[in-house]
Length: 301
Ligand code: ATP
Image 1 (cartoon, helix red, strand yellow):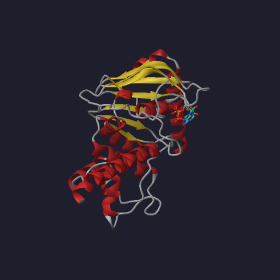
Image 2 (cartoon, rainbow, N blue to C red):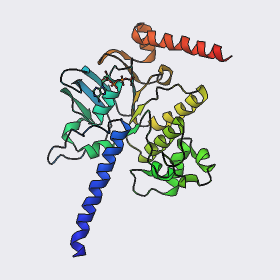
Image 3 (tube, rainbow, N blue to C red):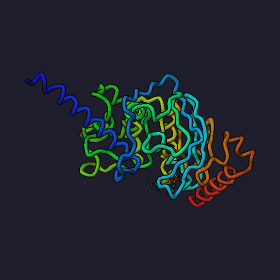
Image 4 (tube, rainbow, N blue to C red):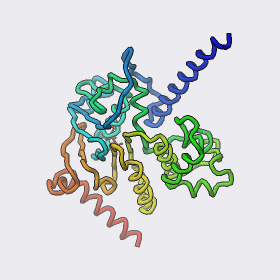
């Protein structure tokens, strides 16, 4: 009889694991209170990623029928490149991330990964191929090890340490009396925003996905922390297709392509130098941030 039950047990475990994975992602996107509304097509195959190119083709979308947010948006992130999304608050940058994760389907147009429409493949396979480093990383009330290893089957001690080292959090963890076994989160040690983000970076490095979505924190970090985080984010994006949502333009100035968004449209597209030369919205945002930085530096003197 046990022989009979074991596969059922296994199924339950798989279901719970996937379910937990979805909740985890939804949580990271601040969508916990929303129902997951898209479903896999019956018999949908898994996404097969050989060259992780991401394409948005004429994508229109709104959360409610009455209010359209994205208006016929197109861009391509070729395999291995870094593409940035910048623009004023509310322009629709995070919405693009949510669509790529297929929390919602576009009203019109399509989103492809390596030539496959993401509506045609399983959500589990899609999400397995994309790592996110969210603005506000949510940690589980569990150990640092659990938080880094989350989503992996029993990674080796060595792999967890390497991910922590690459995310520049190893010295911090090692200085704690319980090291990787330290309980964090609401019921344990409270980590700072930067430390939480590093744990999320370590988790992504361990997951090793071909595509990453970086959602830069809005909060102003001191410039040393910002430099440190930038260096670690560079390590995350190296060799992967990266879509970076940025508030500070200095963090994405060397991206291969910058999409400047305003009110759900891409209004300018190009490299940093192209966009400065164009002297439009990007140049205006850049000059404003440069003078703000100068003012902050002068005030600090
Ligand atoms: P920010 O730079 O402030 O993070 P953003 O460019 O990422 O902004 P989005 O978060 O994509 O902007 O939001 C775009 C628009 O969609 C906003 O007007 C917002 O109010 C609306 N919006 C975002 N999430 C939802 C939601 N879950 N339901 C309804 N409307 C939403």
